[in-house]
Amino acid sequence: MTTDVESGPPPAPPTRSPEPLLRLRGINKNFGPVQALVGVDLDVPSGQVTALAGDNGAGKSVLIKCIAGIHAPESGQISWEGNPVHIRTPREAAGLGIETVYQDLALCDNLDIVQNMFLGRERSRLALDEEDMETSARDTLAQLRVTTVRSIRQPVASLSGGQRQSVAIAKAVLWEAKLVIMDEPTAALGVTQTANVLELVRRLADRGHAVIMVSHNLNDVFKVADQVAVLYLGKMVSVRPTAELDRQIVVDLMTSGVSTRAADPRPSTEA
Image 1 (tube, rainbow, N blue to C red):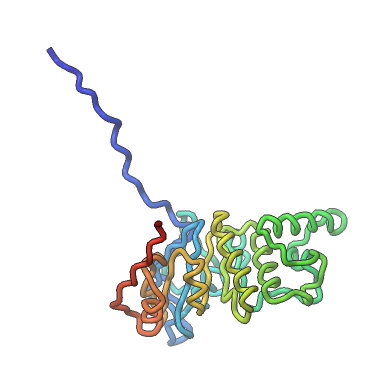
Image 2 (cartoon, rainbow, N blue to C red; image 1 turned 90 degrees about the vertical axis):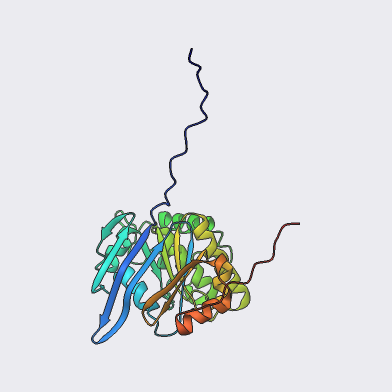
């Protein structure tokens, strides 16, 4: 007589890490005899802040411009949502859902917030649809909890540095960016303005956007980044979760390309 042996639940299928939104493999970029990027690899997941660190001349600006369609790499592969792509122009980058907020912000002082958010992409029927643009701008700022601006019709010239940065970020979100690249978003900002911008950066990731944040400020990096990528002389020398790093390790990587230190254990938050 045979007896049936009760079996447990079937084993769970092996888990596979989700495909990153953006994947770079072997990216090389030259300017004449100068090799600005050397075999750069990087994965940028959705819903996370990837901090891009490096000393002056390390290749940070060149790398984000390759992603943004301003520079074309000599070789290497860029994959977007698992598919190889060639990003030849900023328009092609925007078509994929890549928006870049540069340090100069590219805002027009003589235009108001709505006009800046829709600059070059105005909505119109027979004439400009001001009401629709106002509604979309107001809704986007509200979704991001940008509450420091007095009116969406106030001129950008009247805004503080932190408010300008918030408008530039909201503009990227308005155009359905899946990846928002920010170049030194807290440069020249005061303490309160910096805190507001960093909250907004974190909020973007929590809403599912991928964020690349170029920053020299390691305090900012450790406040909001999920992972830190470090460039040294054009080479990507480290991409690690922020929890595995401390400031001294990042400084070592930025200045010499190596670090033999282990991160100091973080204090427990448990009672």
